[in-house]
Each structure stands twice: as structure tokens, then as C-alpha cells.
Image (tube, rainbow, N blue to C red):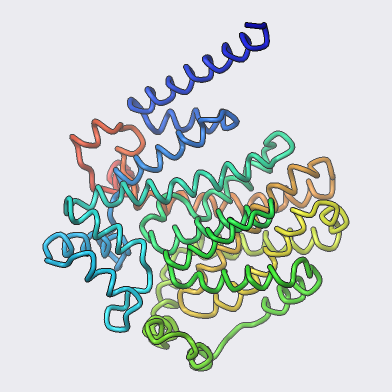
Length: 426
């Protein structure tokens, strides 16, 4: 055996030992091991350590019992399924039925399958963490793997913002946000690598949440129009000035959709529901509302500056031009949908593409001084968003998620959010 083979075996065995050490450490302290894995993100197994933490997060997830949270409804459905005589054929026949209202397949199917074994919501949310965490971890590392420079402080804030746009605690709304991760997973591979199988993953998001028929429509438009960057920018700017839409006109314009979707369309375009959503937003603290506005300012400032001053660099890299073009297009769609109750969630979906582009672009042109100044100016706005997002997450996990491990979590079932524990301590 020659020297090269010996060296390869040595390094492979060394990396294997390190990987096994991480997995063993995870059983003792998942949170600490995950932080160490993030510090060494370039290790091949670091993404799997992060994925495992997403599973652990689901296992220790604190179900929100107030405010009509989705997680509370998921837990209720699990119990109802577990104590019913429904079989899989009956459930399957209810999909895309006007009587049932089931237009999302994945979550009801998973809930039903788990109910055949247990009525314990912990098991359900562990599985949610497993599925969501897979796509979440892969999307983060997909962006990291395409960076061409070290992670400078400014780029780190952009990466953190990208990760917190759709974080693991969004399993509280498993359908919408898992669909967002799956759509991003597929679309990025199509846009950056030209892989047509990425389109299959993107289309699959519709079966997780029906509203992703609109992002899929945007992807189809891009597929045929390609990189019409000037058109996309014009569309992006025009839709930014639309302040109000007649919900009745929107409802009528969507009348072509199949009958099983009409109840959802009517619900999302209902005037009473619109007023309810506005009232809910007004109840948020000022910093929550400003964090949403702040990240929008940052996106607009960065996107417009890149277009007007750096477009020649982008056109030299086909994959960057693809991603930037589609980011502008889907953000334009999101601007329109944001005027519909609950449609603002599409802005978050669009932002995941925008920040994917920003991170990759910054890593490749990090020496440009003008770009460095612009990045620095947006940092305070992004930091506020990150802080608010982390605070929101405290409603869905407790101290066990931070200091516990799988064994302790089995023995001690915790249902108190971390933010409540902090308030009691203070």
C-alpha cells in the first residue's frame, strides 16, 4: 500500500473518530454540541449534527396553547385521529374534497400515521422536526458551500438573518414553513446548478401547502422568460407602490381554481379576516413591527444598489444572474400577495431567496469597498430582526432544549416556554 493510500486512510479514520465523538457528545448536551458543529461548519458531518438538533428541538417543542396557534391544532387533530375509526383510505379520499377542506397532504397524512401508534404530540413534533430540519439544514449548508471567502462579521449577520427567516421553531406552522423550505431546496438547485430535478422538489411544495402554487407559478414564468433582469426589476419597483387591493376582485379573479380550493380562497380574502389580521399586527410591540420594516429597507437598499452598480459583475456569473433575477420576480409576486390577509408570509419566502443571493454575492466580491459600506449600514436593521426572531423562538422551547439531553427530556417533560421562565426569574 503506497504512502498516498495510507495518508488517505489516516485522515478518513481521523474524521470518522471526530464525527463519532460529536454524535456521542450530542447525547450528553445537544445544544452545546450543535454550537461546536456550527463553529466547524466546514466539517462534512456538521450539517447532520445540526439536523439532529432540529429533531431534538421537535422532541422538546413547547406547544402554544393560546392565540389559535397551528401547533395546538396539530396536537388536537392527532388526539382526534387516535380516538377515531378513520382508516387511511377514508383520509386519502378526503384530500382535495370540498367537504373536508383538506388541500395540504403531508401534515394530515403524517398526523394520521402517528395516530395509529400514539396520541402523544411529542412524537408528532419530533417527526416534524426531522422533516423540517432536513431541508432547513441542507438549505443553510447549500449556501455556505457556495461561499468563496471566509465568513467575515458582516457576512455572518447576513447568514444569521437567512437562517432566522424561517427557523426551526416554525414547525409551529409546519405546513406553510416546511413547504417554504422544500420550495427553496428545489429552486436553489435549479437556479444555481440547472438541475431539473430541483423543479420536482419545488413543485412538491404545493402538496405541503396549497399557497405554493403561486411561487411555483413564478418559477414557471422564470423557466420560460429566463433572465429578463430589466423586466423583473421594473416589476419589482412597480409592485412596491401597490398599497391596496380589492379583495373581492382578487376572489373573483381566482374563481378559475378548482372547487376544493374555493373555501381557502374565500377564507384568505374575507374582509373580516383581513381586519382581524390588521388588529393582530397592531398588537405587536413597536420593535416587532419595525423589524419587519427594517429588513424590507435593507433588502430594497441592497437589491437596488447591486442592480445599478454591480450588475456587470453579476452578468459574468450565470448562476448569480439566475438567482438575482428570480429573487426579484418572486419578491414582486410577494408584494402583491402581502396585501391579502396572511399573504405577508410570502415576503419571508422571497427574502430567503434574496438573502441566499446576498450571501453568495458578498462572498465573491467581498473586497469592494462600496459594497462593504452598504453592508455595514444595513447591519443594525438586520440585527434587530435577528433579535426579534430569537425572542419569538423563546415561545416554543424551554430550558430543556438548551441544557437538557434526550434522556432528561424523556424523564422530565417540560411545557413552559423559555420566555416565561426568564420572566419568572426576573
